[in-house]
Length: 138
Ligand code: AMP
Image 1 (tube, rainbow, N blue to C red):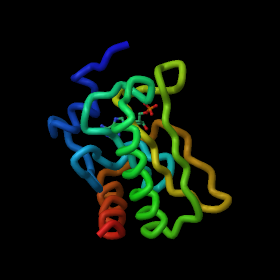
Image 2: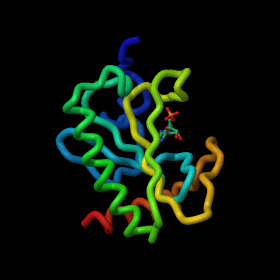
Image 3: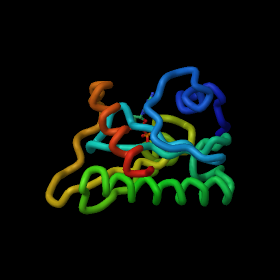
Image 4: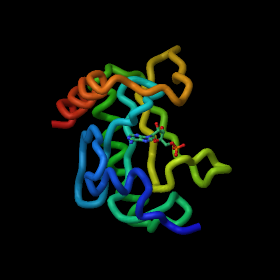
């Protein structure tokens, strides 16, 4: 399985399609999932090419997890969350739909289930949630 330079997250990295970015550093980018399964659902990706966890370098994996931790802390602060769920899927059989390595970081509240996948969020609400996370990071 090879890396496709034209996958949707590669296009987001090149700013060829819009995204609601909340954080970036030299190695990683974090942005809002357009179909959030919880308010504040963020995706963390490496800036370099990696199809998924199976072909990623140790450096990419490490950089992503450092950013995941930053985002999780910011989400907990921004949404007064009780916990965090981290999801990461590999290949279609593993549930992966976009073939650029990504981590789902989901703020969780006691007793509240994740929403089913597949419902687009209103751009204004994504913006509002992103702003809360950006403020918590600053
Ligand atoms: P998966 O590969 O199964 O981890 O799922 C891909 C995730 O990417 C889903 O949660 C989608 O809602 C999300 N997604 C797909 N396209 C975009 C996009 N253009 N911007 C932000 N998130 C996206």
